[in-house]
Length: 172
Picture 1 (spheres, one colour):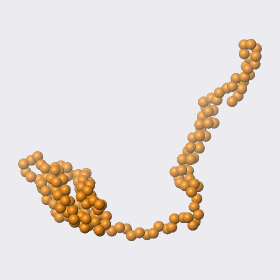
Picture 2 (cartoon, rainbow, N blue to C red):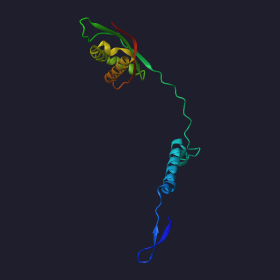
Picture 3 (spheres, rainbow, N blue to C red):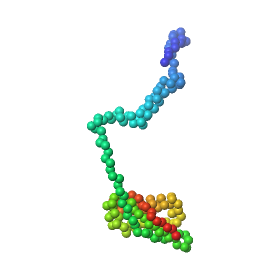
Picture 4 (cartoon, rainbow, N blue to C red):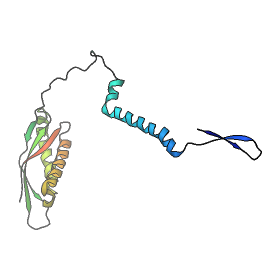
């Protein structure tokens, strides 16, 4: 900041200080702060900060990851399900569906077999409330798959069903 000498009304000399203009303030204060913040963000997002903050010796390094065998899924085929769908017309509309269940572990097959009547009942109750237009297109099938998956996982808990696979689906 620069100081100027001025004479006041009593003849005395006084000093007044000039303020920084907006351009100088932006150039000398704001711009360096923005550059420092940008450099810090760049270092953080590139991961260089992790190397600097947590140096490891060779002895502390993680061991090489072991090659694990990919898990082999187990499949369980349900019996064919035939239900009549809810319809506004006097003519009945039927749905025949064949489903396979993809299980997390092969041991879960026994858990599914124990509660199989409950699973079939849950599926039939849900399917009977559907209308044919709710099963149209791929979006309808995705919604059906998600609903069936949620319902079966509740029925077979603590076992886990990974996916519901449609082998056959016929609406007539």
